[in-house]
Image 1: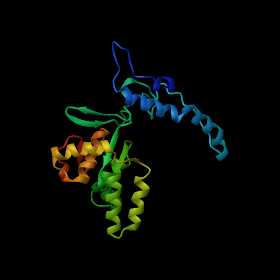
Image 2 (image 1 turned 135 degrees about the horizontal axis):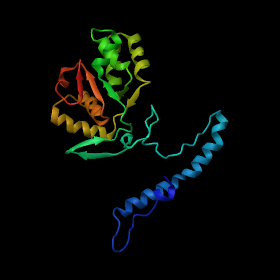
Image 3 (image 1 turned 120 degrees about the vertical axis):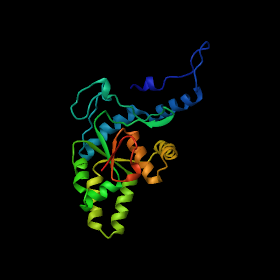
Image 4 (image 1 turned 90 degrees about the vertical axis):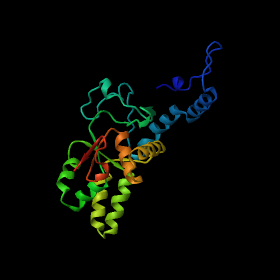
Length: 221
């Protein structure tokens, strides 16, 4: 988008005054202070110094193009950085297209990394074609448990498998969504954060934890 369009005033007209004029004015000042064109110019100037290459990408259809097949269509439309109410509950924009997403919880990762009896079933999900989401709470739980079991090699193996995936931070919006879900489903804190992350990204939660049994969007192994 053009800076001119981003920083347009919301003052409106006398017959139809704008809303949240002061807030929009502050946002406009922040956008103009950032000087996007000057930033791009400096990047183009200094990137070659470190041997890099700055590639300018046309914005047309970038939010409607599948990252895998490059097909542009309205159903691929991404919703970025938006939280909104839906059926009385909070949902979070995924920043992803309609590609298949899965989230393996801590119990699944432990089975897979340690080669327990359900390792093959979880391995099918983790090694399949779907994009795997890894909430930071899963990083914490699995890494800690493996270290407490004195399995440092397994802990490092877990990091080498998990960190290249799509790691999802616990944001303020996601925390609020988890709070709402915890009231509905009476899940412990870590579990409800994992479930809220899966729901927010419309990902299938794959688990062996019976506490998730019967919840929508859950595959119990």
